[in-house]
Length: 187
Image 1 (cartoon, rainbow, N blue to C red):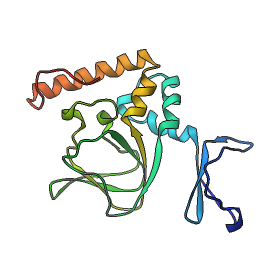
Image 2 (cartoon, rainbow, N blue to C red; image 1 turned 90 degrees about the vertical axis):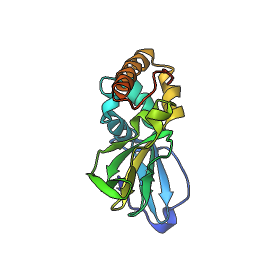
Image 3 (cartoon, one colour; image 1 turned 90 degrees about the horizontal axis):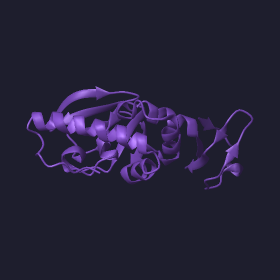
Image 4 (tube, one colour; image 1 turned 180 degrees about the vertical axis):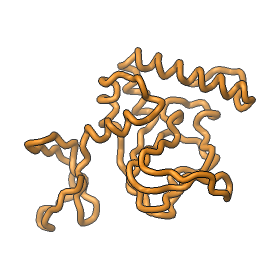
């Protein structure tokens, strides 16, 4: 949601804004334009992450304020192959390409998710980036840090158990493929 403001109204700030229709989380001034980030749109972004399917609405609502938005210029790497990550990314708007080495292997569009296991695990096999994701156009990317997710999960035991079971199944599939050692360490 973009709000057009006169230059005299622009002040570098983060503040609470209420309108008749919705409550907005805050307005962040970026250069000469203001961008209002709505909490419910952050929740919508998190709800679309396949890993979080089936998690409680209360957990997703608690997670929404932890989501940060970042604008990424065309040609900029969002994630880099081989790096160990500590967050996940949701491509909210824009186009990106996935590279394995120098070879482009896939195109990504609105709604694509990268590094979801990095947002809940410290296990290197789950947090090492398998490819480079490069913005093809100006991209609005939502970020969710592992420490924030784990902090919220500490208050939602049922959701933590559900995610732990999903990780166990994923780890088991990696073990069957020989991509992961037998030792179990991720929480």
